[in-house]
Image (tube, rainbow, N blue to C red; front, side):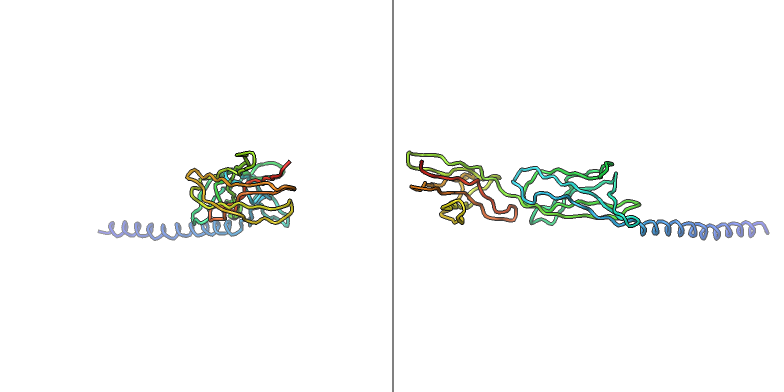
Length: 237
């Protein structure tokens, strides 16, 4: 009759001792993890200078460095992964379009390439690691439509400026602008709507002396910046 209480007492002692030992082991480990996280170095993303305006379908290159400060000096991080996100103008959603790892060169850099599709924000993101804090940098790109065009002679005395808009721009307004000398101001002279194939055609002339200059313009929209065709000069020989 005395064996059962003894066994129960042993079981109770083991149970009571097990909980505190486990809890005490967890607290220093968590504290160490929190301390290491708190002591990660601050970082910032640098984006090298780039052209803020591009044509539709052009190649955009974004490069730069992930930098941090240590003992009063600034360093560029090597071998860390960064991501490139894009958010089209008018959207609230970011989409990852690439990732890269900073190089081990004398000047460690990341580099991204993307095809331009419209006005957008681009964000370079570093998510952090055990030694470095996360950081990010957002930049903006303005994209212009393409308006390939040319002047054609439709009769011995008549000229037309013809072309189309890229990307698709069906039944939308385009304006013909003119200036009377190379340094004169542009002014609109007429407008029309594009065809179902995004084409346009304007009659243009030439002065008896000197030169006239023409170009076609599309208005700014959420997706695209204001856009122009090439400038065309007309004159009479």
